[in-house]
Length: 313
Image (tube, rainbow, N blue to C red; front, side):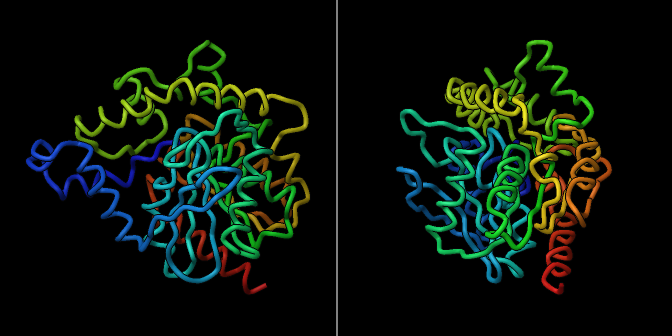
């Protein structure tokens, strides 16, 4: 859900003096550039569904397309990409209307619509068969893709995916029932609270940078609220449970989930594993909803080992 984890270490290296001298926007750009360079990623754009879709691309090997969660963006995957690009061609798009991919008048943001966009994106890049992964909302999209287009995929990586209807009630579900909307923020304090809610190990972000990122989220609040409402209406509908969609799936699947996830309960991992023949589960003690940011190397190691087993079959 959050795309800030990769910023912390780079900002610390840049230093507090530079922060005040050059301002948060410039430092943010320096941090992004440094982390992408470390991971071997470069930015690109390709036309999909009537708009330029921004994405990151780097590495060599079989393609691994990674989908971010709600309110996040492509650099959510930058921390883990540095451990993956030696084995895979890592590709991380900004799903509309997040990050640098714009909204278009009359857009829909249902899981089904986003699946169609991801397929068009993969075809535009000429990927052929590829691995597909996703976190949270991106996990729901990746799972729905596997259910509808299994012939496209070499394997599936579900990282705390949304849409597991039979999971135990999470803290997020209880807060939504109480009328709260913790994923769509109105001020900098709520933005910090969201980081703390989503991650057990949130990275340290200097105040000026945090406020700059909060301003971006606040400016997009009406759009994000509309997207969230559409997703919730869809996920609450009948026949949309991810464990039902993927029941009996032949796509090799790894499920990664933090045991301290407060947004989506970790009990969903077993439900998915029971539904998908041969699925493997990686449970991470002390980790929240964004494992690829909080503990990237163990997640990357687990995925690489899983993909090697799949390739050896």
